[in-house]
Length: 117
Length: 110
Image 1 (cartoon, rainbow over the protein chains, first blue to last red):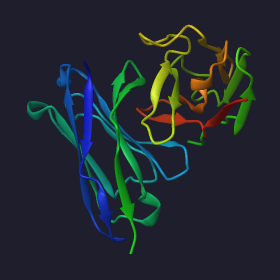
Image 2 (tube, helix red, strand yellow):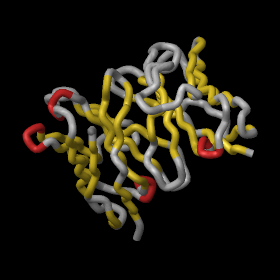
Image 3 (cartoon, each protein chain N blue to C red):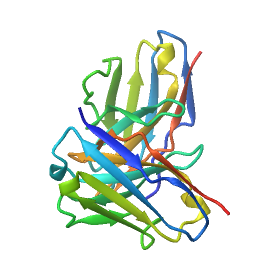
Image 4 (tube, rainbow over the protein chains, first blue to last red):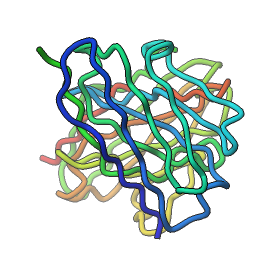
């Protein structure tokens, strides 16, 4: 069974940093690109980042480019989102999602991030 | 990219059918057959109910169906049930390793 488990969320002040993790199991992690998607309170879903299987291709939404960095460790079946220079508008639940032929099929349960002074 | 356009809400009575539209552009919905739909109950993670426009993952009832015409995709739920009350989001691959979501539609089962 495919499982994705996010961790690392919490509360941080504006300008601060957080590192989210996503632990994968139930499939050959190194075979699949991965994505981060977020959902602000009471709002819709927003795709924010993609990383290819070997980390060769990495892409970001305009809203986070230059502040967030995605990475993965295939040996540990994990991938990460380093979030710097956090803003109030980054407050959201962050989900990791597995790419399967250009569809985001499997999702984790999400980890909440609150940016507030 | 701009978010895909969905109606904010739809409603129907048990047993009826409802359709949720999702309008994009030729750069996303119209350009790829990689449209997916998600069901989200309050406080829960999104769950995929359709992908590749029309395909249902294992375990999703055939009451859920999808279609696409031009830049607009649609989700139809037939034989509405109380447990179908949820938020529904469409999503399309938008090229260059990016995805775009719709703003979400709240389905109320009357």
